[in-house]
Length: 146
Image 1 (cartoon, rainbow, N blue to C red):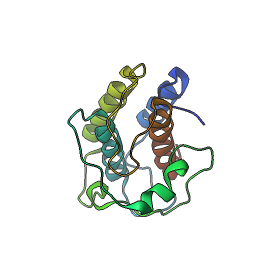
Image 2: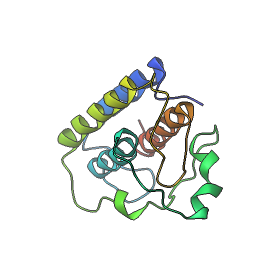
Image 3: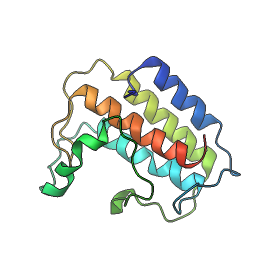
């Protein structure tokens, strides 16, 4: 499994994001390209937030924890948590800039050994964080054919 902490994967994801245009249509799902780019910011914000957070005590996400960072692709049309659903229209260029800045900020922390507890999945290793972020971005970029 690739990781957003690997230089090649990091650069390749950014290149893919920069190829997105308003003409890109989803191969599945309902999001526009601007909404998708905005949606992809949420998990990175969770990772980069240094404020202590409470864990949401729900055993259901734990059943899917390993699928967040293993080699098996996610299935299409997975449900999205409410806070990460983007329903209004978003400007692709503005949201792309924000996403790229978050990706850069995440990559800069590649040597960090201690991370905040994930609100759904609990304690994750740096390796798991890197793989999960890559997998989420790759899933949505594939959704838009890039």
